[in-house]
Length: 461
Image (cartoon, rainbow, N blue to C red; front, side):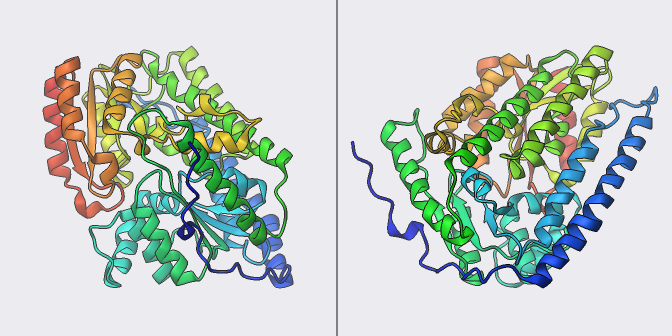
């Protein structure tokens, strides 16, 4: 069947700002602050961090292995990314994008990409999200909204951030394959900042995607290209797009390989290692350095395996984590679980950034983008998610599942009670719901979480 045309509301009628050429002051600031001072300083800091991490030795009483040394490189890459973005206005075009948006086209056009969700997660991990969320709530945004959205809107309204300053976008790209909140969230951004908004609407999948659904998404991506070209002031090179697609595919394959090292017994990594090192696969996919980073991270993990270093000493129970992490309590959770001999060896959240790699065909980047961005876990049915969890239970030889009932992420949390019951009845697993919020600590009770984890550990015994 012929796909229907995209509705006219999918591309806002706000005209892109005229380029006006490069600003000499902006260029001078970019060159001095980013290239001459910032990059060398971050490289120096990374060397210092690597030296300290290499010097760490696991003490006999320590349950958790020292952090992976390559984490220092990830920190440098992400810091450099936000530093470059801070000085990008007037030098390079900037786009704010949702985490599940087809960014390869914007990468190929040379945009600096900002992921408000990742920025919010960084604020959460640094325990600054509550303060920034409050700024949005004081302006009238409900506390029932996603805490990522409240963190982003709070930053927009107050300027508060942990990265110095977020650059003003020239374009907004929103794909509703992760939830519907992003649609309304980005409309607010477009209205407040008077910036063109492109919405990619993905049909929800209750069964494998049909050709007309893929074609529907592909046509929207094709309609996005001239808008992005007008903003970028240049034409899209198909050769460059294929190169970016190749980097995306290579990085996703390496990421999947890294996560699959959790199948080892004992596992050399935990899901917390995945949460900590997933920034580049979200923010920097399509870049050559991301591929090199994950290749080097995989090498370090393989060295751990060869040396017989487990991520959790005396690993007794292997467990799956469902949903987003609780960014502001990762350290406490890893230690609390480690004391019980529990290792979170897998997470369906981090897995979502690698499991679609086999779908990627770099010679057909537009077809690939349509197919891949239709299939994120949040754009598939709860039944499909349950089947994925069951596959992971088998592949990773797991004893139990912790389902994070995330107050902010309702699409991910939908159906968790039924999923817990099916995992228990069908597979005989121990399973527990842990109620919290991925970014807002006001929805987390340490006493309640500790009680649930101790009860869960009793079920595992």
